Amino acid sequence: MEYFLLVPLLVIIYFLHQWFFSPSNTKNKLSPPSPTKLPIIGNLHQLGSLPHRSLHKLSKKYGPVMLLHFGSKPVLIASSVDAARDIMKTHDLVWSNRPKSSMADGLFYGSKDMAFSPYGEYWRQIRSVMVLHLLSNKRVQSYRYVREEETSNMIDKIRQQCDSVIDLRDVLSCMTNNIISRVAIGRTYNEGESGIDLKTLLEETLMLVGTFNVGDYIPWLKWLNKIKGLDTKVKKVAKDLDAYLESVIEERVIRNKKAEYSAGEAKDFVDVLLEIQNGKETGFPLQRDSLKALLLDAFVAGTDSTYTVLEWTMTELLRHPRIMKKLEDEVRELGQGKTEITEDDLGNMQYLKAVIKESLRLHAPVPLLVARESMEEVKLFDYNIPAKTVVLINAWGIGRDPLSWDNPEEYKPERFLNSNIDVKGLNFELIPFGAGRRGCPGIPFAIMVNELALANLVHKFSFALPKGIKGEDLDMTECNGLAVRRKSPLLVVATPWSS
Image (cartoon, rainbow, N blue to C red; front, side, top):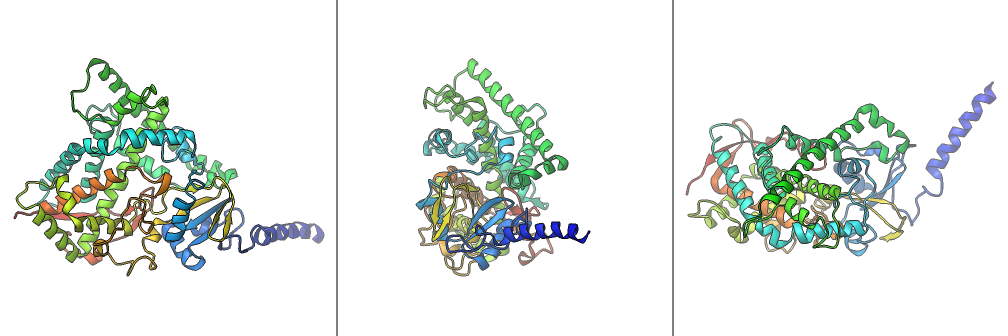
């Protein structure tokens, strides 16, 4: 009897030994350092509720390049400027693929969008559509009046609430949502809708995209998603989003049959995409699902991350009155005599630009960027990295690297004055929008929205925290998701300022 009990015990010991000490897992000079992993789950238990922070802490022990296993999937964590440059510049092509994501497949029409589409000819075509037809400099400038009108509407909304405590997140999100909506579909959400709550749908989409899906890393546990109702939720959100996008497209097709645009009128994304859908302009026939996936990209990428940066910026300014005063002085001096700040005024506001950069350094909206996957074996530093290895670049950790930044935890916009460091993906010390082929093509648009909104906020109002709350007492707790925002909305009191 004891013999029969001993056999399974020996088998278990053997497999555990193979797991921890097999040649493929022992540390050697060809593999990056790695924390000890557990059977089945690998290093998933070390991610925590805020993975960018947990991985940053681990990198201090294991180095700027470390290897983890999420279930059976090898995942590199890059946490230094040199590692980011090697991945997104030196070997950018090798690292240009995306790992398969069941969430992205379920929500973005089988990952037919630009953000999650695997690297290849299809991706190159839709990126060309996005860069040349939707986000070209000329097209971005054509939407200037939308940005300025919605910024002005935001100022009016705050002015009406000056006697009360204002939920600044709600105000900022409304502004950015309206800008993106008007640019993408020609109108704001609440104009002519048929009972579809797009704002809620987008929030659910962002939540789902940022949700950890165990089935992607431990395939035989994907049934857990059904038990938790995750699969059902994805299907419902995808169905509702599709119904909304279909209604928008059909409405536009009918309208365009009846009338042409007036001369000089800026076309929204729907019209541009419908024009190239037949492939006459690009030689690339844009299928209906691809069109809808690109529209969804615009909503998802352009709303949450943009207002999140503004909310973090206002939070930091309220925590640092000296910096707030310096910013107010610059904007109010350059805006003296003006009823509002326009985009023409922003070029001379160097401290304003430094404030935005410093916020992006400390509060990268997508702190781990979007995961990449190697398409072939590649060398990273002295390590041999096999094909199909996922890499997460910790932009949040790189922004706090003491090798690149003096006093990295200090909010100090002055570090960007007389500095050439920018956020466009050429300076790897500051990569909140990524870099290389898979970098965000909407950087100029997002920065313009942030700078214009912030300039008008401090030009028109003096902001303070509700009575009894001090700046140093502000809750800085983060809430995880696709974009990492404050856990609690920022509440403020606004007082009109007059010169």
